[in-house]
Image (tube, helix red, strand yellow):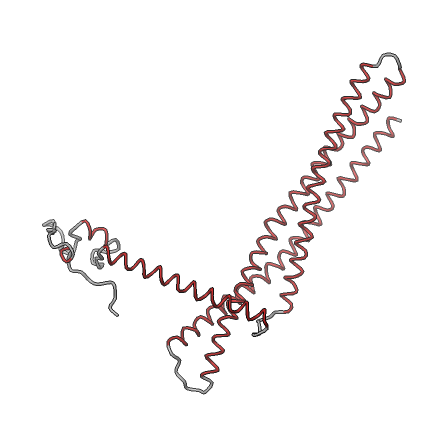
Length: 295
């Protein structure tokens, strides 16, 4: 099969009626037409391709990409089906898979914690708003009540109580929001990044096993020594080592990421839980001190 790229001495090969426009003081190797200027972007001596040739090269590249994608997809799907039906043995790392399962379970619990912390922030903000509205209502009723001094005093007392609760609640609400932001960063960024690495690792493991299956078939056919592999068999061997190397690199990367995630999660949550607990304790202690002082 002849190559689609050919050397063309001048642009007149495909444009016979086009005159060469060579400047007298320039080298003859300088592109002599508008078409050649377009086609020789790297060097003046590069081969000049016609429009049909460039279109043909584009189609060849597209078909080659589709062929490679189709081959990998078929192998990937075949491997998944064979694993589900028990027709092949998958590569396993018991300790790593256990750590992945623990990570997934931990992520689900932290997602639930984040959801509940957000709800707490929303509900508590609503309570503070209600307390301020209630305080204003008590104050208005205090001004309107002129017949009973005892009732006026109770309106004033309850209005001041609700205002105090709302004022002390602002600091607690701020601490709750800081806790929510820390959880959100941990779950949606740090843990999500590790999850993406887990998915890439699992995909690479399936691809590696798919090409390992083909390579083992090649070895079984050529079990005797000194047998020369065919071109297709050499391609399978290269693909096998390529995906094996990719799988091992992602595996090592995942082990490091899970370890760093555990260290970072422990450090961040220890700090945030202490701050969260102190904020709640200070909220109730400050309210208790103010009420005891008023008594």
